[in-house]
Length: 53
Image 1 (cartoon, one colour):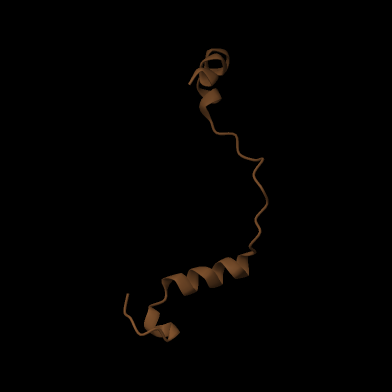
Image 2 (cartoon, rainbow, N blue to C red; image 1 turned 45 degrees about the vertical axis):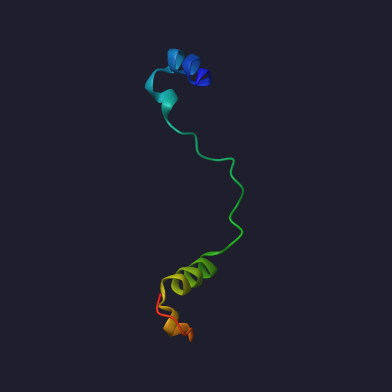
């Protein structure tokens, strides 16, 4: 909490805006992400599984 006090006193509300960046680059490309979402949202019976949920 104390890490926010000094920047807020100096910059006011802009100090509260998140600074994006510094994250690791994505390891999964858009095509793989699309396939993962498709499989995750598909009913198990579409994948040949014997259960319904």
